[in-house]
Amino acid sequence: MLLAATGDFHLGIKGKFKDVFTLENVERCVRSLEYFPVNVFLFCGDLSMARRYDDNVKHAINMLYSVSARYRFMVVGNHDKWYDPSLRKTLSTPYCLKLLDGEGYYLEDLDLGVAGTMGWYDYSFSHKADVELERRERALKATNMELKKLEAGLRCIEDAGVKVVIMHFSPTPETVRGDPFIGLCGSSAFMELLEAYGVDYVFHGHSHKCRDDCLESVVGGVKVFNVACDKRGFTPLLVKL
Image 1 (cartoon, rainbow, N blue to C red):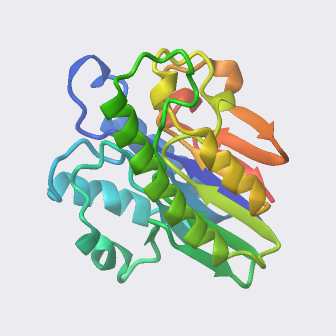
Image 2: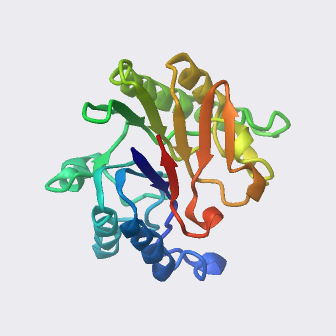
């Protein structure tokens, strides 16, 4: 069984990163999978910088549809302002692309469970973060909402032989070391939940300024991968399960 994961295309980005997250780089990333027999494709959020579901977003979605894989899953990221829950049916039909926001799916033919949600941050990666109480409380509230979503998805895949989770934010500081904004990169509370449910693999994006030598880690028996596409040379990570 071959799994491919990537994320953070940031199509339409402005400013100093517009020469990094180009359409050409993104298309090369997607086309590279044509040469591999991928069973499951995962996208970890921040597809487009558009603020509405326009033609640019549709083009980006079509690129995900074009990936040659039996199953395709994605979560949204903090920059996916174009997304609205009412779009979920539009995105999933008639193509095999499931947008996960707390759902979990058991793929019987692969004995594989896939669950996912965006995740969030609560400053737990940086205990020295000087954050005003109101901001910290808002972050904790959002984190707790995402935790509830993820647990609902994990309950749906409890009996799977292999359990995979996709997120946008990281569940551990280990795969975002060196990021100057590490406090905003995720929450350790997610890792506690992942360990409790015996998750095998987690894929996330979001962090672009972490060290190149910390994109993969094993925490409490859970294999965690940062698959932000720019950190991996616009090449999806391939994992043989």
